[in-house]
Length: 203
Image (cartoon, rainbow, N blue to C red):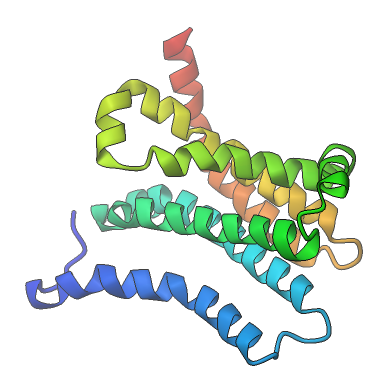
């Protein structure tokens, strides 16, 4: 079933979703330009980009349940766009840390990745998302065939690591990362029967 949008408006919906997804980045850029990011602008950019990377990951994972609950195949048309936006914000988060926070000081960057668990899991999530973004095109789907689906199940691992990264990063108020963790648990619980069936079929 397709979402009942009239033909005259349907063509506008995808560009509108694209612009809405871009708004958080534009807002951060405007705040940076206006010197309105607060006392620690680098920290504000890190948190802003990281929060939106995790939000878009969870929104992307929520599209399949939404399709089942609403009966609208419409949702899946935006899965690739939202997934790429998740990577866009994750990459921005990583680059802010690498270029602004660490100033490309490799003598401290490498030990931080190795020795600080929250950085280790965040960096690993970033690495896992990279091949997913690079193989998100229809051409790569055709080229990889069944391997494409297996590869893109890494998004579950990346989302889990992203939530763990947030949990370990926050030292005091855990309410927000726990909300994300609860959403991820619910989304994975919905997928559990299907994932178990896939594992049985592959055995």
